[in-house]
Length: 151
Image (cartoon, rainbow, N blue to C red; front, side, top):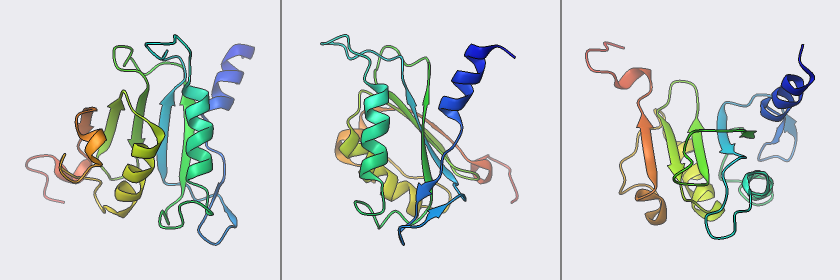
């Protein structure tokens, strides 16, 4: 196997997160995926890794006990949102997925709280933090939202 591939896989595989009781739990069902190649437009600095670290810190049990579901924050080398850096996605099984661009960590933490509370992940722009509403690049329906789906 290519050594570079092994390194890239290590960067995107889930790691344990702190649950609200402060204990490590391997049952992670929510993912926040951050592009690590995006460059900040004014500075040209790649800040995806810094954003990952900031989100991990902010979503730890001590900072966000209201986020009861397990989250993992993963970095990936490209999400094809280059025109709107930083690009960040939210995913969970059976839920709508979201792709945001041109964001900051505070808005993402507020959205994480909302996303964890939604059974199907579906929310309209008025429910999202105000500074994220105009930065939604895509909302991809979860399985139950497809027209004609009888589930």
